[in-house]
Length: 625
Image (cartoon, rainbow, N blue to C red):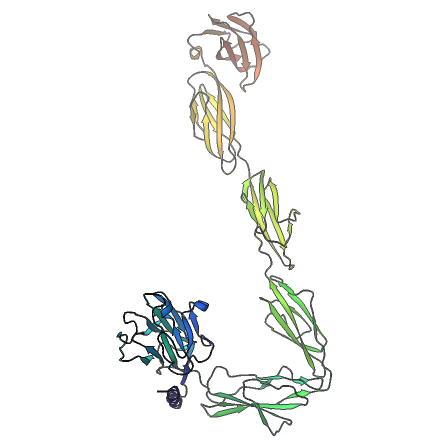
């Protein structure tokens, strides 16, 4: 069957469908146009010059044959690719708006040959509501290139064969697409054959016109052409778009009553240059309802008056995001004004308006003078989000008092900005010594003049300070921690023992002078250490070293205090008050074993005598009366 006879038969089928359902359209793609893939079609993945799907003119090669009809075919180059190579050819979107439960089909011709019997090259056909092979794709069928392979059938001779598929009724709307998935299985590259398809046909069920096609009035942005001539673009106020069966007939006349002359059949009409007032009307027909509608007569007036020259002035062409007022636009040269687009203007019919676009926008103003003559002017306003400002603190936004902190306003590498910090710094980075918790802010202005700000509270944590006090009962000491912002405590009692309790109680095993050390760990800042020297006094002579015999009298003492050692020389005596303060000292230069110390000048109370003999310290407690 020839291409002409096929098209004629399909045309008859199409006309029959139109008569029965008044909505079926049969579309064909024969790949004869040089544009490939055809308009609206796509190839995925797109590999440019390396696409496996290509257009090939007739006659074809590998195998050699003529196209099914016309000048070319669509070819899947399975001969040229490695085994397992796949690529899809996707149709444009199919319109099933008015399909309902009606049958829809896809048909095409494929060339099948007997070359390379063991080569399983194949074409799989899918239908989907997207242009990909996702989970929603429905498989319609697979065809082996080799005619001797029974997928879906076998054929006795090499040639073109027609395959027809019904489309599931679940596919409706305007997004359905057919997907031809080619698969190459040639064991050796450049040693296989190719897959050819031609004359793809599919049904469509577009929306159709109904009733009277009322399209409103004629609309023109230039109802008056000044200067003796000009042109105008005519459109309809209520156009009917995207439906089948609508036709247009534009007519013009020198009089509002005719006679009328047909001038155009498109939805809009450009008058071309006219030099006198001309009247227009448009008749719109619906072929499915056989009803029509004719617009009211309108005119384009040609005037000899000189048109105005409309201008737009603005102090800036940049709108900064967050600007509550907007960019001021001032029109001049006419008496009334109409601005578009109106959505991002505060008003659209004043000479002065304020624009707050959300993207780069071109604004147009139509200015009209008292004679009805008009002119337009345009201005482009760019949208600028301003710099991205985010204060970051290094090493952190919470640090110990006295720490150096580096504040950065924007990332490194950003140029063209102007900076102003709350402490007067005008660089991208502000280096501070934080002595107290402080709030900082920065304003950054970019090259377009748009500003953004950010603020940060930088917290100074008080330092940790170690401190403690103590009370004693004989050789038993109760230590009381009074450190600031400490979380852990390590005590050393000066005799090799220690504790990690916050407030330990410790009993010394012998009198003596001990250095007590407390190391505290800070909650968030530094560690700290404090040491104190304490004296553990003998409460009676039994607490003194048994190798040393000592006597102290009278006790309580009034005027003099006698201290004597048996078989030991007294080297030095230091007397301290209860606060540990030295109040008296004596160095024995006579190497005697007994001394008498005047204590009449001491106030009443308890005192501690530190007696040193031959390198040993003998602490003794006494009272002054």
